[in-house]
Length: 146
Length: 116
Ligand SMILES: Nc1ncnc2c1ncn2[C@@H]1O[C@H](COP(=O)(O)OP(=O)(O)OP(=O)(O)O)[C@@H](O)[C@H]1O
Ligand SMILES: [Mg+2]
Image (cartoon, rainbow over the protein chains, first blue to last red):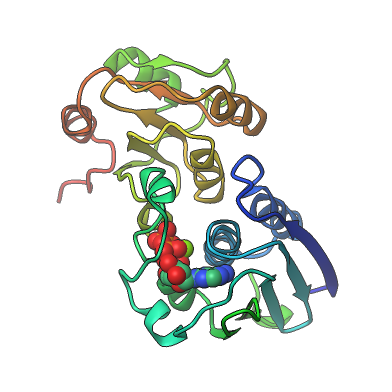
């Protein structure tokens, strides 16, 4: 697969444009004719990361990097950071505001969805230090590809 | 079944313009928690929900849904309709409960495993 690097901005609490970056990423992967099942996994991870930055985090960006055998997705924001990452990863744990919950966010499932759909996930965050979520997806080699 | 056939058969009305009505309905899903829908909604499904705000459109696009059906006679926000028209996702209105419509859709074969 051809190598590619792209970045998409995220604006905190901007619910009007939230999700558009993930749709953009999805359309790029579709244009590359990546395996549909793999695109769906990446789309879930991208969306959950984007929404977490919008809802809980700060301004930031999504970095998409495609190499021969792997795709890396980094979602960085300069928001308040996460105090206890292990607890944040627990299914059902959420600090979402009442406003976000009324919109159907705050099930505490986003990070779990990311963990279940990425081949590897790493979260680097601390109070006052922002949040960087990095996810890796293995790409099939051309010989065994569809 | 295409979205437009489903609309005629069950008396659903479209809140969006005519885009996306030829999409094939391959299943159904009910849910109001977005990350739960994100995790589990099948590709090509109709999504029955009470959420009418703009962020449902991205979920529908990313999960490659056939249409979103707002149940309980809820109305989508203006911004939702604008985005849905832009992305070609039909937003349909159902006056009664999700349970009622889901039962009828399932009975007609939508998302029902083939017998045998
Ligand atoms: N970018 C971030 N910045 C600060 N806190 C975060 C960030 N991402 C996640 N968190 C914290 O981790 C918690 C769990 O996140 P997760 O995505 O699993 O659930 P949620 O966003 O609360 O609900 P859901 O994703 O189901 O709508 C959040 O409630 C929040 O406290
Ligand atoms: Mg989340």
